[in-house]
Image 1 (cartoon, rainbow, N blue to C red):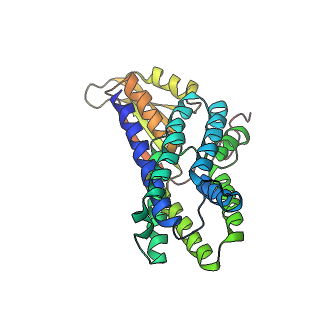
Image 2 (image 1 turned 60 degrees about the horizontal axis):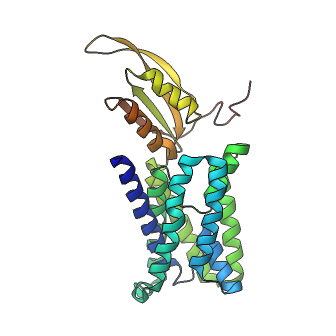
Image 3 (image 1 turned 90 degrees about the horizontal axis):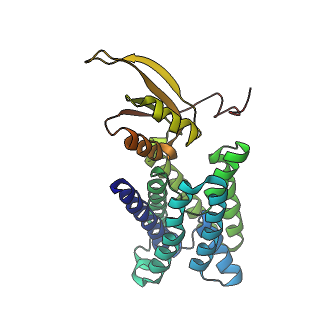
Length: 283
C-alpha cells in the first residue's frame, strides 16, 4: 500500500512539473508544444476553446482507449493524470506571475523543455502515462508491433506542423529547440537513455515470479542455473528483458511475492529477437 501511495504521489509531482513547464515557459512565449497541449493550443487558436477543457477532453478519450487496449493496471495510473494534468494546467495558467518569469525567449525554451522532459520522465519511469498522446503509440505497439518512439515522433511532428500555420519563425525555432530538449531530458530520466532494462532476479520463489512475468506482464523470461555462495543451494535465477516503463510494475510484483528477493537492473542500448525486433508470435 505504501509503495502504491508513493507511486501516486510521484505521478502527481510529475504532472505538476510538466504542467508548470508548459504554462510558465512554453505557452506565454507561444512556443510550439507537442502532445495534448499542442492539440489544445491549436484548437484554442482556431475555435477559441479554453486549453484546459480541450486537454481534459483529449485525456478522457485517451484514458478510455488505454483502458480498452492496455488493461486495467495501466488505466489506473493514466486515470490519475487524466484529471491532474488539466487541473494543474488550469491553475498555473491563471497565475499571472508565471507568465512573466523571464523575458528571455532562449531561457524560456531551455527551462520549458527541461521541465517538460523531467515531468514526462517521472511519470513514465513510475510506469504511468500522462494521459495524453503517448497512449496511441503504446496501443499501436501492442497491436501492430510498431516502435513506440517512432509513433510518438510521428504524432508530435503532426501536432507541431499544425501549429506552424499560426506561429512566426522565432516561435517555431524556439519551439523546436524546446521539444528537442524535452526528448533529451526524458531519455536521461528513463535510465539515461536506455530503451530496455535487463533484470536478473534471485529468489526461492522463482517459479511464482516467472509465472507472473509470463502471464500477467506478457513478457519472456529465461532460467539460469545458479548456486548460492553461502548456503550452496542449487536454484534458478530469472533473466528478463522489458521496456523501462514496466520496470516499476515488475519490481512491485517481485516485492509482493518475495520481499527478500535480490534484483539487479541494468539499462541496455539495444535488443534484437522475438518480442522486440521480431514478432513474439513468430514460429
